[in-house]
Length: 341
Image 1 (cartoon, helix red, strand yellow):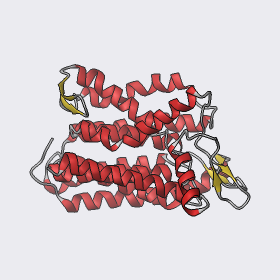
Image 2 (cartoon, helix red, strand yellow; image 1 turned 60 degrees about the vertical axis):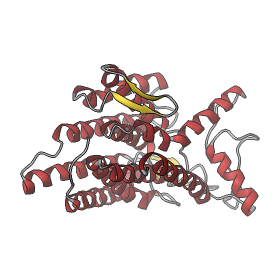
Image 3 (tube, helix red, strand yellow; image 1 turned 45 degrees about the horizontal axis):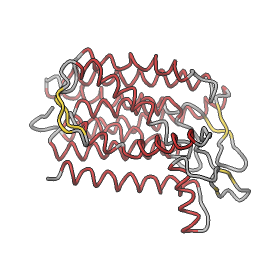
């Protein structure tokens, strides 16, 4: 999917809509969540402060507003429909996935929907992309190469991709600012790749989401005043997969997601050792962190161990910065290998 050009002013204005909406609504939600008792403990702090839950619904809504603002600007100022089917399908997918996550958040941590129900309910969320037959059936995959899936692409590969990304994005989580930072880096990675390849629609949609998440990160960074919850992880994971599908960039999209495959392997390692791991650390009275297990079962555990070896102590922001640096290295390598050649 390519276009000859894109109106950068429209993209900037739409991104600003997403940013401002995210900041305003998240700030208001923090107050409402505390008033209604929708709060949870911040597990990586010695005092375990109460923090507003389920705040991730607002950057997802802000992102959808930003996308619709882009459509409106093209329609009212340029008199054209700018990829109307693709953009509205994306908005529908984003809101549906965020709604499922929000319901899970309302039911409570570890009290939400059973895993099998999440999978069952998440599967139909890909329908907005399925019904418009989004993407291209001929795809390039790492190691395997180019494969033509035919009708299996929209009917099988698209739902599997949406389901997989929405659930996998939840795996690297549990630290102030971690999920939001990773979402911004992945969005920027897709935007940069798309800009180089001339995939201007995907570039615009990535930038809009990055700004929506940035508005949320203002309140989610250490010490967090609001948690993202499954609303955020389901919503962004599904959105990310949709961008990859719309841009026909499966090889790069999977490669950008490398850390989540590593996290899955570490999770399996834990199961083989009889450990159903938690990402949270052991917190010392001074607020520094130590690994919760003898072995490494998560990238967050690795980040703590590396910090302790290099600095003598580990902190929560340090965990986020370490994983963010890994993502930056991966993203740069992927762009150099797949885009700049």
